[in-house]
Amino acid sequence: MPEFENIRTAAEAIGRITCIKTSVEVGLLYRWDNGDTQAALYEDNLSETPSCPEQQSNPDLSSNRS
Image (cartoon, rainbow, N blue to C red; front, side, top):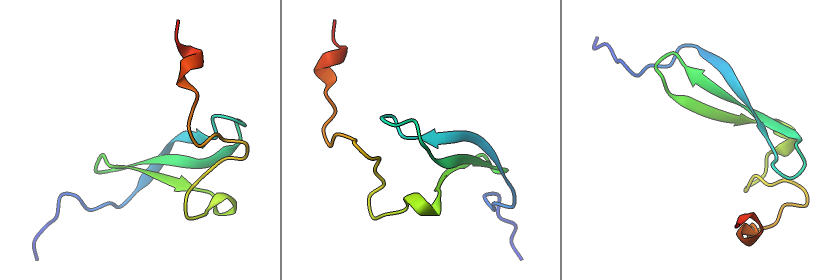
């Protein structure tokens, strides 16, 4: 049987995913033992398109300009 190098067997949480508007934690970022990373959102926040309450659909980039 051939041995595959990209088989994922274990993952470690390396970061938290938070909403930039509300600072509410919505998931975790994992790194697999083969180097891949994967985001995992909490079930309460799952929808077709992940979003945060009060989040603008188009960010106002002009406010950050000097």
